[in-house]
Image (cartoon, rainbow over all chains, first blue to last red; front, side, top):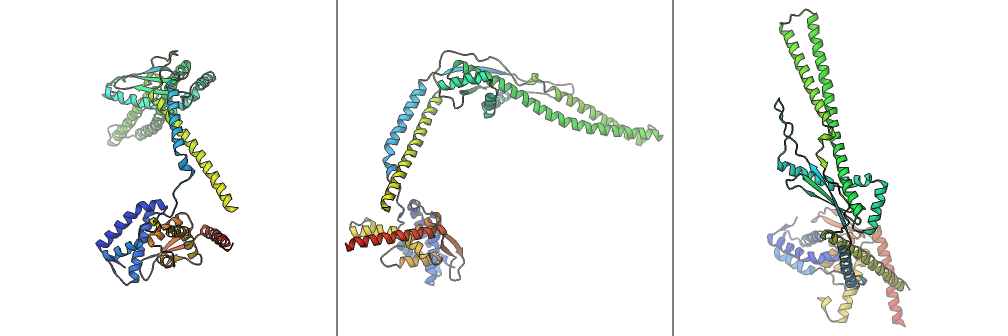
Length: 363
Length: 115
């Protein structure tokens, strides 16, 4: 076992740090090579019967190791020759796509949803049913806005389109390349302590924009209702199970009281009083749970929905300028497409020329 | 440094060594597995090569990354644990192809000289 002095360790660390950069160019694993070199030094010292590695020993060895020489040739050839034409093509594609999408006709339509503040209800028994502050409402609106923006709602909107609406959207999509799918660009804005969410849709056709905006409202309402129903159904099923259990307990307690009476136990006897009290508690619990179950079932009603449609979207024949984000996205997409196509072409040409040189070598 | 030399012979030998060193490593492992220190000593002692540890270990690491050699660590009674290198099946195939090609090159080169 070789003992390393601090200076020896420091010199080796300095050396391995200095060769890390060149090593990366050779395709070797720098950590592996550092470990190999350390092992080599230890072998070398062990062979010379040296038990303590000093700075001087290690310095002598690393000087002999010399610098790392990249034996692996770098990537050259057609790839570099393609660099400038490819860069020029990407730039041209970005500019052209940006210009084209900037001057493309886009139509916008928006529909709105009004969210209602739940009323604070204080019951006779002092239980607070619902309460909402303005800040709490703002937070909820953002949650609803995120729901409308979600892929799930977008997918449901596509599923809910009628054949006639689908046809309309197909025609709009042909006129306009802005849509990633046929629905167009959808933005949901609102919040800030208000109670209205606006769903704006940009499309290549005014009627298609209005159809999609209204479809989003319709789908969101259906989704909310189904969601509300699912939650209430789950709660009702749970409460029903609990109620059945309590009913059985109450029946068992009643039977016990009857049994005591039949046995002639007096009404003021401690045993009878305890049985009656237990029966009363069980019946009271059962009645309370039935009431809760009834309230839960009522909450399935559509009147408990968080929002209602306010303004429906109408087709607006006046085009609007596409958003800067849309223009930027189109430009970047065009740039990436040209980069991909150019790289593929360069790779194919490089492969072809490599094949040709291989054939030349063989001959 | 030899690579920076303006002497045409020096430059040529550096290029030849670079290409042949990989083949030398594969040939050195053809018969049996060898541990790093032993392998490096065998290569650095080759006449005319003048290679150092700083060249060989990165090359060994790259050959392992390429799947041409495999490694395993074994304890040694004489010193630190030893890292043994062995040819993989792919390494054997590559070595055979490289040896054939190298022989062809040498033959072609000598044929030209006789003419």
